[in-house]
Length: 288
Image (cartoon, rainbow, N blue to C red; front, side, top):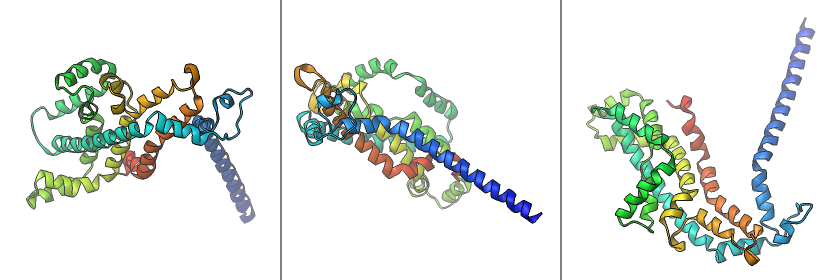
């Protein structure tokens, strides 16, 4: 009987190990498929235009990486555009996080009429397509005299229904005993927010920061409409400028791919730095 049990356990362990190996191989295959466009862009950023269009395709690492990256960075001013975009994305991320925290504080811990209706109205803004809001937003920004200025790229994005929703749901999961204890100690709303709620919300703040930074970094339509000066533009418009590189208007794919890789680095770094908070921020079941 004991030998039979040991044989059963051994078969189970072998089968389980086989399933684990197959699972890892499947995940590795999916990861390679997802990463293949990035790897392809990285490879082509080292090649000349002739090598890019060689048939059959060449998968050898080229020798034109310094030239391609240097051209994308200096000749097409990606460095300046990246600085503009970083400042704007940083300002929007900080401002939007603060406003979302304050709005969620009011919706959870303050009692006023039509509070739930106001929250529903905030959520309804998520259902409005961006093109529907472009024309009235453009007229409003122009009426303030913010056309062709970075104010037009920062202020309209400071309000966030997504941020309000995330922080509201998190605040509602915090034990009410903390609120009662704070009231007994005479702690005001803002002090309660900064000293108690914010330290308990770092994972949600990290998730919010990643989402908003990447969202602003990838803005294309609104900067294209509202900003007329190239030196004030954002990085995605700079990538569009790269499509005109090359002799006689022919697209220089090596430079374009180099610009793409450069553009990807800042949001990738932000995600890597905050990935733990990002994952925990959405693991609502783990929130206490």
